[in-house]
Image: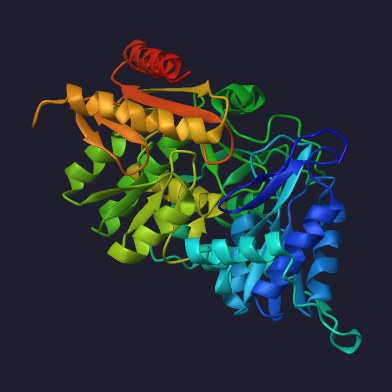
Length: 465
């Protein structure tokens, strides 16, 4: 494997840098473990546009064929499209070949269980047990796996979005929106411009060639979207949209060329959906408190979960939520499928614009405003990171007067909450760091909260060592 780096094995799958921490042996063994996990039955596979995806695909096929699986390959597709097809075709599982928002040199595979549902904790544990013990159920020579291809995936996904009860394509056509679509040359390069055209929008396609050569970082942070911002202003567009590598996320650029963080995507769509259907909303502990204000305005309940799409989905099922998601720009639409869907978000925000008759800037001005600060503290090991968070909890508990601010929330790590701001510390699940996120009315206040928290953690770390 060259250098000593190991791939990152997380709740959703495995990722690494191709030729460094990720090689075909790891992929094939994970695919054999997954084929064993689903009992050698039907598995959907699809891939993003990365140049290493064909190699990874062959390694996945080898592992699935070896365990007797019937594989239906839906080709180059966004992650939400692949999961939706697993549901449509009633497959026992799916493997998506993607590194999502990771840099271009990375790749990986993400697993889902029957009908495109994200794996539960028990299912993840069982898959990892098979992988680690190499307890593979290999098929004999006359029962090897088979391959079928399906070319209808993109069309099917478009039809599901266009048939959504919250969408009125005729209204969007009347609004005559001009949209710049930046797919980052990733998996959304074909489907997203196609959706916009079917909604009657005038489309300026930017980085919409699915060749895997990313001309900007795969993660659509505000800093990565300079070209999109300039193009929106130069073309006189009403809005700019950007995806990550596998198009499960969407972020927005205003008509003035101002890039918005992924927090705004969920805020806009929650407000839009709650005007249609009153119901609970689900988001993670580190998602903006704009949602607290929006849900209070609509008189509905906001549920907070641990960080991770799987936790959000689980809670959405439990409370029959209207909408849910994360502050990354990933939003989950129960009427389509329980996974983050950046393509459906294009339709939802276009509808929101058409119905409101306002510009994106006006929509922003109508919302409550907070600033977020995200930092991390590197720790020698993940075990020490967990211990440090536990120690910090003891310190914060002592400082807390009953009923006084800040309140402590322990859904994921330790979150201290005031009326107008919060700070959350939690150990990373994938690397030896403690993530420190804060939000306040101004960036200076948010950063001060972050810095003061990191100082406390550093002081506690000295005590341990």
